[in-house]
Amino acid sequence: MNTTYLRIELARVSRDLVSMFFIAVMPAFFFIVFGASMDYGAYPIGNGNVSMHTMISMAAFGAVTATTGVGGMAAVERMQGWGRQLGLTPMSDARYVTVKTTVAFTISLIPIGLVYVIGAFTGSSAPGWVWAASAAIVMLGAAVFSLYGLIVGLLFRSEAAVGAASGALVILAFLGNIFFPLSGAMLTIAKFTPLYGIIGLARFPLTDGALVATDGVGGSDPLWVLLANSVAWTLIFAVGAVLLVRRGRSRQ
Image (cartoon, rainbow, N blue to C red; front, side, top):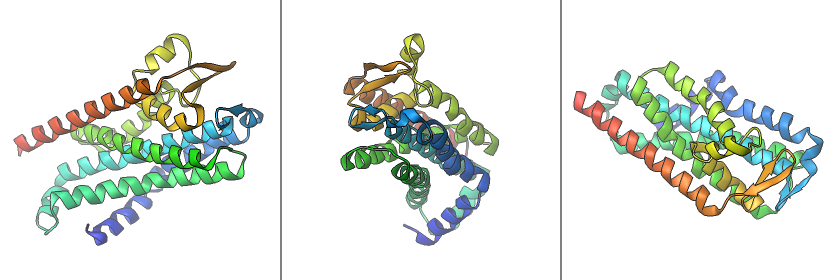
């Protein structure tokens, strides 16, 4: 890996204060408002409490926002001439992808770490293995959304479009049962949206698939449903990204 390029990329991304606000500060703020400061946060659920449930959700939201932004900007940079510039250097495409992937993973650790630290000091409770397992699943699940960002970047070739894609994650997060417990027809629709499976898997060590409703626990999701959603959307994003990369190369 080209560590010099990695260091430059990390410094460049971290200096973008607007993006860092949405990646790190906003999920932490949402967690404090909807989780840490609420009396119901201490209510027990599964292997922990409701505050832990909210903490995992907000960490996942911040992580997917981070990977979407980094993935999308990588695609835009390549098409705006930066790819030709890099072609004059000894760095291969594989090293470029490795650096960008590492940057996305590193940036996604910021909201996860920040929200989890706040949760540890504000009453989120669960066994240690639940903390570790949920954080690991959030990191792996967030990586899928670098493909979503890549697709948007390849389709629209605009920094504004990538920003809009990150903003659209708020809608996907709502449909993914992150901000508010859904029920009825909305819950049925939510199960086919891209964030639902990843969030459900991240919560699974805590809830064993149980769903939170406004009046308590509202049903449950079998593990296979969450895995099927995650695998299906990963394949959709991967195939879409490959097709768009091939289309872009055919035009060169």
